[in-house]
Length: 199
Ligand code: ATP
Image 1 (cartoon, protein in one colour):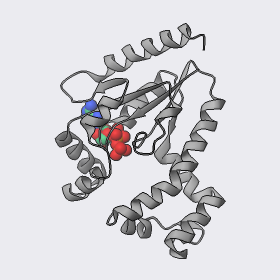
Image 2 (cartoon, helix red, strand yellow):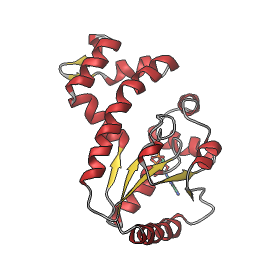
Image 3 (cartoon, rainbow, N blue to C red):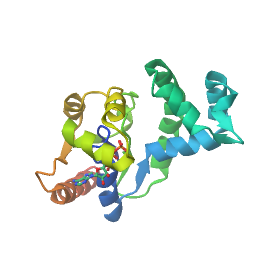
């Protein structure tokens, strides 16, 4: 089975693309969602977060999101610290999930594949590209937040143009080119590649 990474900057359209792969019958691991689950349920991770972010990080047994967000979104060092605690757990959890899949290929969708140094896990990495102005607009609309907040989140990610050069395949989600045929074409290529590898 081929292990595929799916990445791109904030608002590029990773989740949108992942939904199409899901409808094509391909299993998708959403790193962001799973990270949230692990932060709520994984005892070792909870202990680490409590240790580094104080007891206030959890309230009545649940992650105190507003408290954590207020710290990490204003302090790059704290964000890096939180990521350094959470990433090893999502990386390990994602690897175990991959091992359980039985399809021709399976996808892990994650914004920070290169930033977390986990690119070595994959046979191939797909990038979803959209220009910054469009990503800004989409994220502001989706999350009802202002430009400055999206921009500051973008600063924590590798520049989109550099990220795309690191990817093996790039899907153009620019709204100038049709996205669906690109995904279907790639789906066929991946099935062919998997069959050649005898996976
Ligand atoms: P994040 O990293 O923030 O989770 P993402 O890369 O997963 O973002 P999506 O959530 O898929 O991005 O897309 C961002 C927003 O843009 C969503 O509201 C989505 O519906 C919209 N969007 C994505 N692609 C398109 C498109 N081709 N046409 C119109 N809207 C789109």
